[in-house]
Image 1 (cartoon, rainbow, N blue to C red):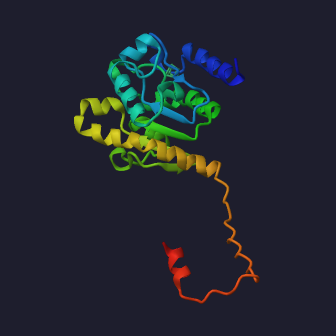
Image 2 (cartoon, rainbow, N blue to C red):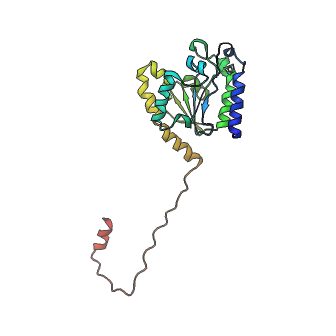
Length: 225
Ligand code: SF4
C-alpha cells in the first residue's frame, strides 16, 4: 500500500473516533469520504444524511444516484474522483451544520486536501462554497471556475437541492458538463504545452540549369487553391 493511502486511512481512523464536536453524540458511522486518493478532482459536499450515516459512505441513496449521473455528464467515473464533506458526521434531522461544527471539522478536510492535492475542487452546496467564497451567493457564481491560491474552485449546487427543486436540475447538469474544460484549463496552468516555434519554410533554391518560364501568374494562382 502506498504512503498516501496509508495516510488517508490513518486520517479516516482518526475521524471515526473523533469527539471534537457535538455531532459525535448522534452519529452511527462517521463518513470520512472515499475515492481515488490520486485524483485530480475533489468533490466537497455538505454533510452525511441518513443513508450515509448508516453506511459510512458519502453520497449514497437518491442524491448519490443523481451524483453518479452528473459524473457521467462530466465524463468521469466515480472511482476516479474523491468525494467528501465539510462535516464528517451527520447533523441530526439533516439540519445545517453549525459554525462551531464546521470549524471543529475543518482540520480533517484541510488534511485531505493537502494529501490529495487536487487540480480542481468542486464544491457542492452553500457550506463547502463558503470555505472559499464566504460572501458570495451560490445562485450568482455556480458553474464559474475561480482561482483561489493556485487551485481552480468550481462552486455548484448540491445534487440534493436539484432533487427537491427540479428547476435547478438543468443548471447543475450544465455546470457538470463544464468540468472537462476546467480540468484542461488547470492542467495547462501547471503543465503548459510546449510552444513550438514554426520556422518559415526555406525557399527552394533556383535551378539554374532549367530554362526560365515566362511569368504568366498561373503558379501564384495554383498555390491559392
Ligand atoms: Fe469530529 Fe468532525 Fe465528527 Fe465533529 S463532525 S465529531 S469534528 S469528525
